[in-house]
Structure formats: structure tokens, C-alpha cells
Length: 100
Length: 494
Image (cartoon, rainbow over all chains, first blue to last red):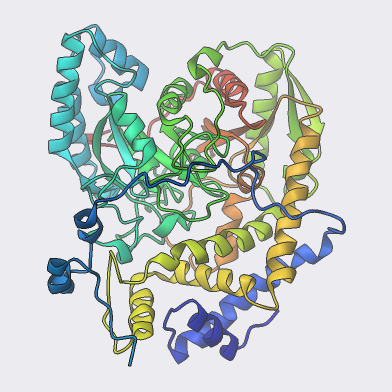
């Protein structure tokens, strides 16, 4: 399937990756090439086949709903991008304003 | 005496226990080798002080008669493993400077058993690549060169730094991870042993996630025995990874009996690719002759969906990656590029932080998961994946293990295939099926190409039957007598 620039722009927005006009054209070509190659899967008859999400046939384990970790605020904040020293000192992450 | 950097894990451990040399001497020899290996760009972070401290502790344990399984043995760690207070970037700019406040389970297991850390080794960005061309920190050079040709070659990928370091004698062994061939293909390109265990054998906790249903950690070593020893420490159930298998871990070294008499070894018909180099065919035939000579019988089996494995992989892996990599948003750790709004910040950070191949895969993954395309791509791929796994189940009705080439070529020159993503993806044609089915696969160096580069053979086994894989691999290793060494040995010009 051939992807056009508009589709590239749309999925880039979904993926939160800024893509310039120029890159959109290049990516449309590259992604189309990959998708066309992938589409050979259409040749395989998969009627009645259950999709396989994981090779683990085991049932996922359950555990008690208890707090097992925590109290590590400073560790969590330790890698915050460096221009956030003020927020770090006060114990939270800072982001651009999201509420008007 | 053999140089300390030439030893295997097992020999080095024996030497330490016999007090022929100390862990400090062994560490010092490797610290020097790591420095000497800098032209390869294999190490991103060197941790000589850590190596010395850990080695000193090992010497004390040995003196007290309390040596553990990997006591004093210096290892390189792929940059995908989180290592406490030691920079972990997954080969990406977006994690520059990230120092994890915790240790991955697999590396914690290695340190628990006495191993010594030399540093973090380079890799394709987020493990997405087959040549180490996508590293944000510059490409890694293969220590091998073609005969009569001085062009630098790729080490394979994504665990290219691991493979190059082990081949160049700048570590006794290294950790790798394998999502579509990332342990086995670089092992083949660099002339070392690489084992991808069964999915669930090693915990994924603390390993930077690429494609969670496919990722698996494993050892990269210079012998099959060393792979068995190292896997012994890496493996085991971990409650922190819900897909980690709660099954007993056998004594892998015990499996290396050298006896494969009466075994049936499957030779998959569909792996005879059109246009495959004659020397790969010839190597495969030699492997078949070796297992015959050892008393096993080759049987032809069919893995009829082999040609669809890569397209399936290039839907499933990017889909999972697009979700896993959503966490790199500039808020809590790693790189941040400021913007007016929160979305501006996300978009600018991710555009600047991710390299072209990672961006490409995130976009593919986003597309195949998006409304209207989910069924046509993602669900379809999951169904074909089920059929690929069934192909293996059927094949294992007729045999105990499979023997195939590891990769369709030897190492290629840096820059080759760079313009064509699909040509690059085809490197994994023989390895990727194994990840989709969750099986163990082992690459063993088995011969040299006509221009003097190493080539590997791959042994594939049933789920949780690494023992058979190692046993057959041991027989191939014994028969191949692979003693060739790369052009570049750390600190020693040959």
C-alpha cells in the first residue's frame, strides 16, 4: 500500500514525533516500500487461526494486591531532565502548562 | 602461559581457583584490553574502577574458599541492560546520561555469582538493526577483516559491541539480547558463540524493552561450554517479569556430553534460499556431515512459512516497539527538548532523540496498530505467527533439533545495505523464525568464507530444551575446530 504525505503526517502526530515536510516525502516512500513488502502476508490462508500474542502458554501469574515497592522519590526524580532543578528540589516533575 | 585475555570462562575460573593468577590480575589485563580496543568503538562506558573493586572482592572470596560460579570473571554488558548508577542508553541519544537507579535481573544474577563488570557495550539504537549502523554513538567495527582488503566491516547487530568485544579479547564474554537475531547474527559475523535462550528463560526485567513478546537475553562467549556456564547464572524465574518462566533450570554444562548418537537433526528445506552464497550452502553441508559422523541422522523437515517470518516480524516488532517507546517523552528521564505546549515538547524531544531507523519503526508500528489497519496488518501477522510456531511444532515431531546456517552471508562492509532497509532486514531471515516461535537458538562458529571471514551454524531446539541445543552445538564446535582469530586482538597487533 502506498502511503501519502498526509498519512505520514497523521501517524507522526499519533506517535508524537515531529516530521518536517521534506521528511514526510522521504518517509512516505520508505514506509510504502516496507508496507508493500509486508503485504505478501495476504497470500497466507489464516482462516480459523487464532492470533498468537505470546509464546507463553502459561497463565499469567497473579499476586496479592499489596504495595511491594515505593518510598523512592529521590531515585525516581534523579534522572529528571536537568533544566528542572527547581521542580526536582520541590519533589515533582515539571512540564509545559497543560491547563488554561 | 596463555595471555589472560585469551582464556575461556571455564579456564579462567579454574586458573583463579588454582591460584595461578588473581582476579585482580585478570581484571587488570582486561581493563588494558578494553582501552586497547577503543578503535573498535565497542565500549560506550568503561568501568575500570568497578572492575578493580569487584575483582578485589572476588580475591577475598577465593581466599576464603567461597568462590561462586563466575567468581572474578570479567564481562562486557550490552547497553540495553540497566546497570545501577552506570549510564544506560540503549544506544540512543534520547537516553544520554541516564543512570538507572536499579539493576536488571540478569546482570544482578551475574554479579550475585561473582562476575566482574568491564563496562557497557555499543549496539544498534534500541536494538533495532543488524549492523550497528544505527548506533547513536557511532558504529562498531568488526575486529575481523577480509583477506587482502582493509575496509572496515560491520560486527552485525544489534549486539555488535558485545560480539566485537568478545572476539577482540576485550572481555571473556558478554551479555546480548536477541529480538530477531541480535545475538546469533553478530556472533556469526564475529566468529564467536551466541545463545538465544527460550523466551521466558531469562528475566526481561530491567532490560530496555524493544518488542516484549520477542526479546530475550543470552550469553555471547568464545565456546559452547562458556555459553552453558553463563546461561546458568543468567537464567531463572523472576516474579518481576510476568513472562519469566517458573520452570526448573537444569545444569546446562552437564548437557555437553558430546554424545548425539541416535538423535534426529532436522534440516529445513525452505532454508535453502534462492541466491544463497555457495559457501553458506557448503558450510551447512559440512555441518550435516559432522552430525552424521557423530552418529546422529539428518532428516529433511519443512518450515513452509519461513519466507513470511520477516514480514510478520516487521509488523509485530514495530507495533510492540511503538508502544514500548512511548515512555521516552522528555518528562521523567533522558533527553528533553522544550516546547510551547506539552505536545510540542513531546514531538520535539522524540524527533531529536530518536534516530532514523527507530523513527521509521515507531511510525510503521503506529500505522499497523491504528484504527482501520489493525486487522489487516497486526491481527493478520499474529495469525501467521501462530502458523509459524505450528510449523516448528510439526517439525519437532520428526526431530530433536534443527541445523541451519545462522546468517545468509558473512560480515559486510560498513555502509553497505545502508540505503535499503529491506536488504538489511534480510540478514535475519534464518534467525527471526526462532524468536516468533519463542525457541532457543545457538550460533556456533563453523568455518571461514573464501575471503577469510567467520561463518556460523545455528542449532534450534524445542522450547526449554537448551540442553539439546548445547549438546548438538558442542559436537559442531568439536568437529569444526574453529581456531581462526580476528585481525584485531586488543592490544596485540598480529
